[in-house]
Length: 196
Image 1 (tube, rainbow, N blue to C red):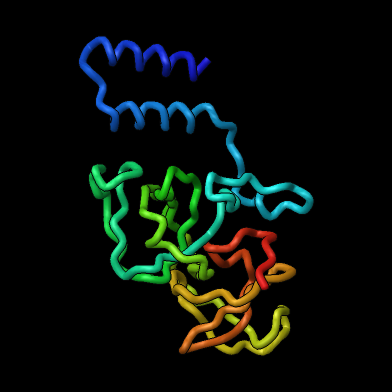
Image 2: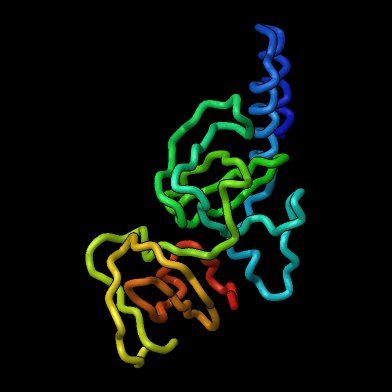
């Protein structure tokens, strides 16, 4: 029903003025997004569930990180689209939620989405420590359990490389610190995902 209404609206727009190819793509992309059933990001990590594959043959959604120190994020999948914002730090984790040709639609830890060229992304896994909170630092431990010695405290929004995740814990590796943190305190890994 929603899809039919969007198609009708698209036909009415076409009668009012010619629709450019960029606008046509935007209308079609919006219809695809609205028409798709909502999926949770944790579905990829669900045991026994086959991940949805994108045109690249890789799972969607999936986490990657920014390869370059300057990444233009565009409103659509192409150089002709306006730049919405610019990332100025390499290594930040982002989630790929859609693929179109050589372009990837990404989501950052704030939930903001846009399109980037695929070569500006890399499969290296990183995560942000509790980007949803302010205040008290979180402990990282020398081994993956609640009673292990605390090796450091990390402020929310710290970014680190993730070397492994298993049984609800992830090992963070950085020049300044190393240790294990509860997986639920990170953005950049799925809740039940195993990384080795």
